[in-house]
Image (tube, rainbow, N blue to C red; front, side):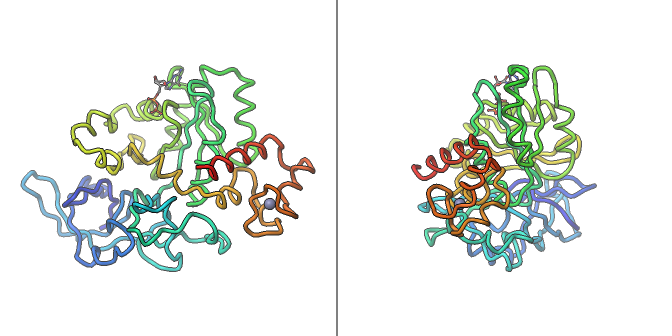
Length: 342
Ligand code: GDP
Ligand code: ZN
């Protein structure tokens, strides 16, 4: 029987199986053994196989045993304590959880996310994400292109599809909207414009989240909770009250759960995940995957070109020839400087 992991407790794992709902599970011993690199053998979003002989617990909750875990398509992970940046990927040829994603180009393996160090194990926060929704607002808070760019790079590094959600369009005028949206559309991103005040775009957003596992990221105050409440009014989102109840700060940042959406998809709910997503964006990754760069970085003379002042840089040439917008290149340089300074 197949199921998806929705929540991890200290002693048990909650999974959801179609037609049966929630099942409280324990793990076969061998699943603990293979977690040499990771703090836990499972993460929210993992696809698991269950022993079909389910029983009922004292509280009538169905109980079962997880026999195996399917290889992950992607993952969001947190670097081990003491190391900088997000964890590197495991060998993509390796099978098993966290074994990397299929179809990655060999050149994408080098110089990307910082390697995980011997300091400890990585903490995989969520796996098998189908779509990252990068939520931004034009006003209050103001649009921050550099931050949006970094989220887009983080998603591209994991080969996760991205949807850019421009919220609070009720506060913006049409020209502002167009000037923000166009460069991203030209770079091949889908953009949905929404307002939780007027309801614009909410149906479209709900349709975009109707199947698969979704993760909302974005600057605080852009309207992520409001958008989730608009597409799924019955969701019980993690609130500061709930985390305060648990008492410990670390608990707040490590608790992740998968919540069902009424239309059929799932959303990852986690207070701290936005920072972890950004941890993994290194200068090298930015230089290769910046929105709109496409294949241009492959033409640079140096494989690790950061497109600043390196000789025979295809990107600077593209800017000079008007093939890549100058203002976007300027924005890239600012984000790069930020990353290098941090
Ligand atoms: P989060 O931090 O991204 O989860 O943002 P919230 O959902 O908490 O929203 C932050 C603030 O923006 C709240 O005061 C919301 O009422 C407001 N807000 C959310 N969506 C919209 C919108 O579409 N238009 C306007 N004008 N305000 C919004
Ligand atoms: Zn270059």
